[in-house]
View 1: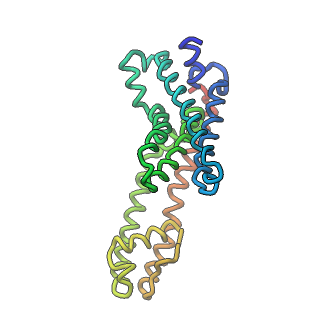
View 2: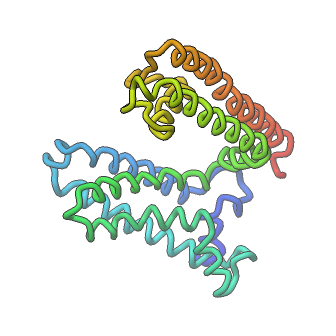
Length: 253
């Protein structure tokens, strides 16, 4: 198989036919299997029952993904943007190439952190970054990116309003509750935890105001939280609707 044929098999945008190539379908299945393996590996009883199984599967997956990465690097010159040595370096630092690399690196880093339980757990979870690689095979991913970009101003504005409201409610609860509950509301950063849990409507209940004025401000914060959650939700819903409608009307655009 020549370089152009490999490129057509690996790059969805290079195919004239609809759908994924057989090779990309196989890669997609392997990504799902590798991610499922990483999830199951976090269960100690499964690791203990077959201590050889997960390392063996992980090695097989990594070898396949390294071969895929090298084939992509070899054939990417068919894309005019990445021709030549400088083009290859540009591709290596492109978004999807970095995602591919981040999905492989945890395997090799795992050999260096055997004595650190926290890092071992972190690396096991990082292997699930492979799921992000499915984005390159999906038009929905580009629709999501378009939607977020088209409403970036409104989203940043809503994030700013949420931040100001968090800070304001934290300051209010600090003023009225600090004397009664110094451990929970003795500073603005301490009160911020309560504000986050309330404004996001999570409401853990581990910290609650006990003064009359504190309960009053807490009620205002809780009501405001409904609007804070609804604002970005509405913005994103409208953006997704516009983006996917545009995709349907202009499938080749």
